[in-house]
Amino acid sequence: MERRITNLYVPEEITFISEWKDFKLPESKIILNKKICGCGFTNYFLSNDEPIVIVSPRIELINSKIKSPEFEGKVFYFKSGDKDIENKLENYLVTIPIPKILVTFDKFTSSLYKILKSKKVKFRFVVDEWQCMITDSHLKGSVEIQLLRIMEDEPNIVLLSATPIKEDFLNSIFTLLPFEIIELEWSEKRVRKVNISFKPLSRTITETCGEIINGYREKGYFAKKIIFGREYESKEALFFLNNLTQIIAVVRKYKLKPEETYIICGNEKENNLKLKSIGFPPNQHLNTKQNQKKNPTFTFLTRTAFQGADIYSDNATTYVFSNPNLETLCLDLSIDLPQICGRVRNFNNPFRDEVTLYYKEFTQSEEEYKKNIDKKLQDSITLLKQIQNIKDTSLLGEIINDSQQTKKYKRSYLVKDRETNEIKINYLARTSEMMAYEIYKDKAKSVYSIIEDLKDNGFECSNYLQTKDNELEKVVNQIYKDNDFQRRMKYYCDYLQENPEEKEKIEFSKDVPYNLKKYYNILGSDKIKALKYRESDLINETTLIQKHQILKDIFNKKFKRGERYLKKEIKKMILEEYHKLNIKSKASATTLKTFGFQLRETKVNNLNAFYIL
Image 1: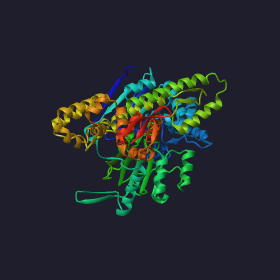
Image 2: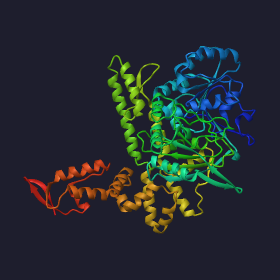
Image 3: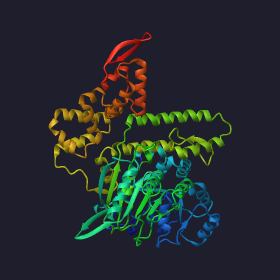
């Protein structure tokens, strides 16, 4: 479905949207791409002349508003755990002429929406950071399905985000729904310049965090810079990690104390128990007042906690840890990099625009990834057909939801719809995985593509490709204009075969994807061509070569010189070791020759065998 896109050009003098007096949105279904973070859209909706409900995926965003002096006592937080919340809401609606309500996705879908629809007040619903509905579909699938249903029914709703979603994915989510897309176009002065330091993860995330922590303990600061002759030190750090388990591993190993450390994560019973096990209080919140300077030394944030939240610090530095080799790729933090870059609000923080990204290469090929999620969808369809023969599925539905809560849709897309109690396929989770891979497939492999993604989100990166070498620029552009890996790999091999004198320059360039260089250097052009440029085969072959010495040592212990072995036994033993090392290459008994063994044909009980010389 082709959607109408309206571009609104923000006047150059506007910094925050509330300053734009002529700004007005139509009453309809709108996807609003604000393009940049920190432009005050939530504040605009909380202070305009419309009854508004802000539906937020994160409690942190709500806390940052209800505790702000500008809105304290003026907005209503419809929160969980308050038995008298409906009476309080009733009193608020009676006394406040233009009500402003804040609520989480969960509480909105489970109760508030139904309550408000029974009232006479006409609300505009604003789903803030709405893209979280897609990424969170692996965390609380039943909530997101219910929210999607409300989006379908509600005539006056705004989906707000600084992270535009491609139209292909919009159509897979909303099918024929008539959402109009409004995109804001900002002047150059609102483009933030960020300096991203890209560092490949050579050690574990825990150990890398430890290096940063120990560095601070030794020097007394995380980073230092001089501006106009004045020296500034960063004594606070923000660590963005994928999940609480990773954070707890760091806290335990490096003996971080609650008085020097904040842990910001989802306010869930399971998380609170984990925090209690290491002596930390549950449900910690970010400092929200702009004049508050004192923060803990170490602040850890999971991807389920920071989006939409304002972070105030006059000296914090930012570290992001990307780990794409998760069971669910869409839970990886690097996908949220534009959001992270926009979180620190203090203009007087000299480290505000400094981000260090530690990243791993994503080792799964596009072919493998798509094959896996296609199989998961087919398995889900098969399971759903089998379940439809069961009369009472209430217990089974609860078991499925409990399983998905921990397994994050690893095996299937099934979910229990908490409103209808039906077991169904969560197509949002599948869209989330497809969207995540689309974002990630180049990102983990190249600095260039991360910078381009930031550029699309209103940032200018100082590490942007600044070569004056026209030949190198031509190579980089040729590589990135085609997303097909096999064609990229072929182009890279062909180019270096024809221009061997350019190899050193290309090797030095950070803008040429690391994986292309790695495969070429380890395997060579002829071997890559023999493998038909298929990434899955290149990964397997590269892994085999890199682990050759390990296997050689193992086989020297397993196979004794002067002994006879059946060929089928040799093959079986080789494949067992391949499996342990996650090597997917084929093998036969003669594979031993590649590890330095000399073999002679023989028989054992009239069966084919080798005598090892």
